[in-house]
Amino acid sequence: MMKEYIDEAEKALLHTYNRYQIVLDKGEGVYLYDTDGKKYLDFVSGIGVFALGYHNEEYNNALKEQIDKVIHTSNYYYNVPAVEAAKKLKAFSGMDRVFFTNSGAEAVEGAIKTARKYAYLKDGKTDHEIIAMEHSFHGRTMGALSVTGKKAYREAFEPMIGNIRFATLNDFESVKSQVNEKTCAIIFETVQGEGGIYPATKEFMEQVYALCKEKDILLILDEIQCGMGRTGYPYAWQKFSVKPDIMTTAKAVGGGVPVGAFLMTEHVAQHSLTAGDHGTTYGGNPLACAAINKTLDLFEQNHIIEHVTLEGKYLEKKLDELVCQYDCIAMRRGAGLMQGLVFQKPVGDIILKALEKGLILINAGTDVIRFLPPLIITDEDVDRMISILKEAIEEA
Image (tube, rainbow, N blue to C red; front, side):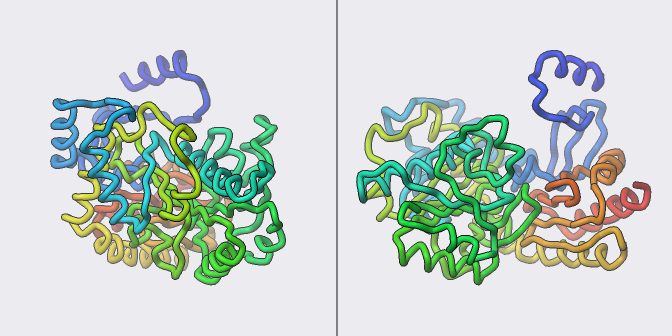
């Protein structure tokens, strides 16, 4: 049965993904099941999306209730779930204004437009530049791709939007050297995800923040993967003595429903986008915002941030033990429940072996195994993952 689905998919779907050869059918807690009934411990959570695990009854019921009311109205009108979601997300993030999108890439697009409009209103010019980071990943749309620091992703689709310079994460001098009178924004992930799980350092964050304040450059922090409690803070930047002018969020913010947002300070909101500058048909629709509302309610109700702080330490401890045990593992890096193991060789075979044994993992580059489990995992789940991973390492 599973092979038939895969064969049909290969005939019908555009081949832009090299998918693993399983067809996932349902989930329960931190486990997924394929169409043949095989059970998998999930340490990917849909690339950091299913923070609350699968088949959460309260979450599901909230969506069912909204479906029976109204799913979509468009942004010509207000709707109650969007108003409530904006209020809750402001409180959770510490930001002032919200624009709901359908995805993380769209949130990045909106952040770029906001920064350019802010600069345009200051001097009336349209030649402003943005500084992004090497090895970063911000999405596949043209604007988001333009600030993604991997040339291989960009080169076939050039020319990009233009006026983008690249610096190195955690190297302040490399950022400072790129700044000129045209610089309107600096954008980076607080923890680089696809680039290999690289957290920004405290020193780097504070130096860039101070530079932005000095020169009225907007600081854009991409929290699409590392936000929503993933590192033990509502948003990863809250660990530091900084605050972005604009931030992006998506993935876990909707608990599984496709939704994102870009948020900004009141100052930026009052000096950037106005009516007619930006829009979306589906963004902020009642169903997506009902998902945000229930996700944020469950975060508070179930003390998810506190749980991640504890469970993140346990995961770090067990991964550090693997580093000591296996010569093929160079190091661990990450924060909270966003971790990476850096190997001395490509990790593809290890991930495939783990999948055969019922453990779902993904890579971040060729030599890093990335760990993005649901935020509800327990010590027992970590121990089970470690046990399977050891077997996979030894066989691969």
